[in-house]
Amino acid sequence: MKNKIITVSHPLVQHKLTILRDKSTTPANFRKVLEELSILLTYEVTRDLPLSTKKISTPICDITAPTLAEENLILISILRAGNGILDGMLKIFPTAKVGHIGLYRDPETLEAKEYYFKIPKESKNQDMIVLDPMLATGHTAVAAISKLKENKPKSLKFVCILASPEGVEVINKSHPDVTIYTASIDEGLNEHAYIVPGLGDAGDRIYGTT
Ligand code: URA
Figure 1 (cartoon, rainbow, N blue to C red):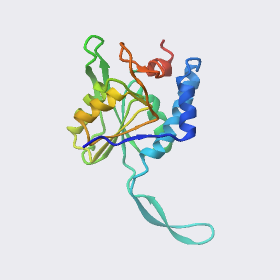
Figure 2: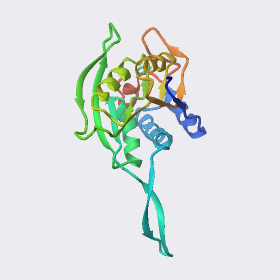
Figure 3: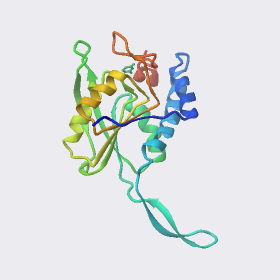
Figure 4: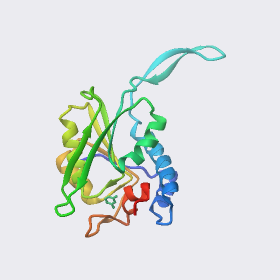
């Protein structure tokens, strides 16, 4: 099995991605545009949510109208940059529950080390969406997904703004069942494991910590 990869090519997504890539974009504008882009990605990521119906009355008449069958998605933010996507997703999916995973990249080995893990109690058999703007080496994503799978979610999706071909391959090897959503698959990684052309360090760009 190979991962399903959905690259969202909508013009608004691509336009906003260019703003994020531009190094002259201020942290304030970066956060705003990242939030908008995340809302647009959510539209794709939630496309397969099941609908049911309910009876309502419009000002004109009674109808049976579509409504989400369940509203209990679990969003998992990989700290700290995942929070930049989380804010936008929560805007249009306010009933989602939220978990956080803290992982840092060991600068020597580039392996992911966990320092924080807190997810909603009832996560068994729920749909989980993992958020991290940058799918670079894929080690962090694989570590996060492996840990989350111990909680037996019903489904698991991974949402990023940029992916590298290397990162996609690494997830594919360990977790071929996970669908990846991204705004772009870039050229590759440089010697510091940054995505090229990328947008730099997402956390630094969001929080102005450069
Ligand atoms: N993490 C980032 O924030 N940027 C990259 O390019 C790679 C990993």
